[in-house]
Image (cartoon, rainbow, N blue to C red; front, side, top):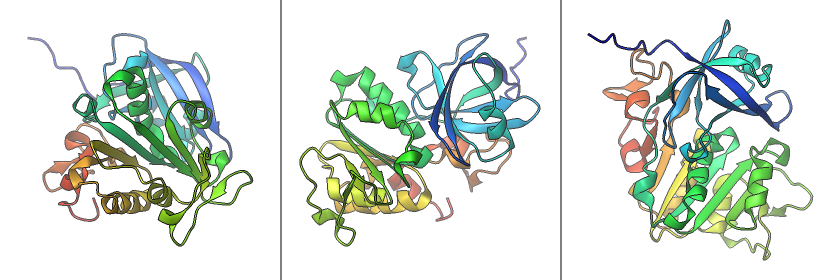
Length: 291
């Protein structure tokens, strides 16, 4: 009889690279790790639990694609575990459990246009989709990327997204006026006259969606970020003609144990960690508002 593997025991992984994303009190870093023993197979949208030994463990979205043959996750410094991770460097050892949860149906989206809409560190799971599509570019239609933050200093993956502007439809936004960034019409963002070639905007992410006007034809839209941003992004996508079944989001920030044992992420029979964290909007809207 083969003894079942204990899902609570983390596997050691070595940090191969640490990439500073933003600075400040709530600094953000991206970590690339490699399991020391065995494989770690995942799909875009799945998460992993990361241990800082002696400090605790936290859940993070995997922020790169399985096509890159690496595991990356992005961490904002907000507590004991994340502070301990931020103090680590290349060669240090962490524990990982996972992959956890479901993923985005990226193979089912082949042949479609894909719109990725993120805010703050919420772009992390969308970056996994982005990398997957870029590595399978011939299988997908138009790619539109919208990523926003309070200021340009708070934008994650800034250099990476700026490099993509030459080949893909990438839009960056900030909440506050900055030199060189075009300010949208805040009263009627859908009437903003964005100059040709401008891709850096001043406006909240939902306003950018209204101004850029991605077409719902043969498209899917995926959004992740602060709950209030998601609410108004979806509202604007519906105004543009997107159907509820064309809109996806991920609720990985609600996951706790990751395996449906602690009962801290469920409402009724629905568990974010087992049934999600990726959900389609027509499913989410049937759940209580607190979900």
